[in-house]
Amino acid sequence: MGSLPTAFLAAVLVVSASAQHGTVFDLPGPIAGPQQPAVNYQYPLGSQPLHEYPGGYYRAVSTASFPVSSAMSGAINILKPGGMRELHWHAADEWAIVINGTCRGLVLKYGTMHPINSWDWNTGDIWYFPTNFAHALVGLAEGCSYVTGYNVGGFDDALDSFGASNWLSTTPPAIVAQALGITPEEVSANIVPGLNTFMPQGDLATLLTNETAEAPVLAGTNAKVQPVMVTPETYRLPLVSATMPEAMSDGGSIYLGSAANLPVSGNMSGAYVTLFPGAMRQMHWHPSANEWQYIIDGSLQFGVFNGTGEVSLGYGGPGDVGYAPQGSGHYFINTGDTTAHVVLIWDSGLFTNIEVNDFLGVFSPSWTATSLGTSIDFVNSFNTSEPDVIAKPAYRPLGAPVNATVPPAVEANPPARSIGVPTPIQSGDP
Ligand SMILES: *[C@@H]1O[C@H](CO)[C@@H](O)[C@H](O)[C@H]1NC(C)=O
Ligand SMILES: *[C@@H]1O[C@H](CO)[C@@H](O)[C@H](O)[C@H]1NC(C)=O
Ligand SMILES: *[C@@H]1O[C@H](CO)[C@@H](O)[C@H](O)[C@H]1NC(C)=O
Ligand SMILES: *[C@@H]1O[C@H](CO)[C@@H](O)[C@H](O)[C@H]1NC(C)=O
Ligand SMILES: *[C@@H]1O[C@H](CO)[C@@H](O)[C@H](O)[C@H]1NC(C)=O
Ligand SMILES: *[C@@H]1O[C@H](CO)[C@@H](O)[C@H](O)[C@H]1NC(C)=O
Image (cartoon, rainbow, N blue to C red; front, side, top):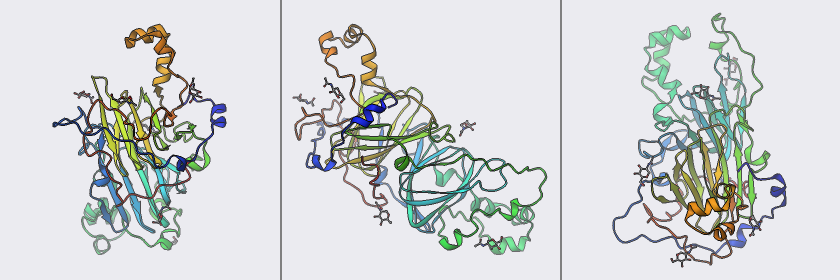
């Protein structure tokens, strides 16, 4: 990405995904023997238990269960109408994309006296909440589903966030009483000891009343806290509906949200990727960012090259997660017969990627040929103008294998899982 000329974007013709339906690649079958890839870069999040709360659902993965994702973590979250992700904050930046419905959210910036506005995030919109900025979300009339990514490997929102309910319910009632100017009796009568609501169910109409009003506790005259003007900065970017794709070809598209188009997202960025059957995200690496991947739908093969001798192959289906460490060479390819949608999240607000075609093409052919132990003629036959999303090549016949040198780690091409997997948005399809 990044190097794609706008003229090219405008010039490409996009073929209908349905024209390619019916094509299923044979995946490389398991090789006899207990072989495993050297490292597992995929995690079957989609088949893990879904945690249910009164106001929604939640399924998360961190280094606790997926050790290789040492710098990032994430979750799929679903809020029912009026369901709330309670007031909370956490010691990790948060980047998210809504994949169905609408979430309303409030953000409390450091130093501000009241929430600095509310936003409605619709399907295809992204948000960014900097570390320890308190925030809360409510599912509107149809509820909302959203994928969150965090730039801390061990972070689990349900275990590691500072929630308002748990804070107040575990503090001595006399302290809470003094803090809020009420009596200990009132605290005891109204706060359940040890409560941790996480995703409580609220009444939507009530939640939408006074939502931006200054909270009474903040409206006092505490001289130590100076009101700060509400800044014009935004925490919302309608990524899919209002930005140009970073890359678009007859293989699919990539929408990129970064500090370049959402300035507040200084430490994280992400993308919404559509791949038609057989299309591949070009082999590339990120010099300065780790990548956390969430599959909304489709069947994909991933290859991660960590520089120590082999490419680890993995497979993922709807709801599954993958990881590509900073600097590792990687690709993914849609091996199914339906369009695939993948969310990518990086732990850097601005970052670069280097595609294999640009990489090899930038050196003189003799250097590349010598490096590869091959001929200059062969190197000259490379097409170094391939787009970032490459459509299924004509030479690959139907059913031809995507050859592998390493057998799959877990079940190949896991079946689609319905529980908790939100229906994908359609607007990302070019
Ligand atoms: C890279 O892969 C090798 C095996 O090929 C493994 O021993 C090593 O731990 C991996 N390194 C990282 C950083 O994942
Ligand atoms: C709305 O604000 C008023 C004035 O602060 C308050 O009395 C009332 O309880 C609030 N209603 C809701 C639903 O929050
Ligand atoms: C980025 O992370 C650094 C270190 O944690 C922090 O100080 C800074 O406020 C963050 N910036 C943004 C824009 O989130
Ligand atoms: C190289 O790839 C580009 C982009 O897909 C394509 O337009 C061009 O025709 C290709 N060149 C050759 C020689 O195949
Ligand atoms: C896959 O491997 C087979 C057998 O080695 C070979 O005939 C075929 O050309 C390979 N296909 C691709 C797409 O590389
Ligand atoms: C989104 O969520 C609603 C409500 O749960 C559901 O009816 C719908 O099928 C989902 N998918 C899309 C694409 O709207």
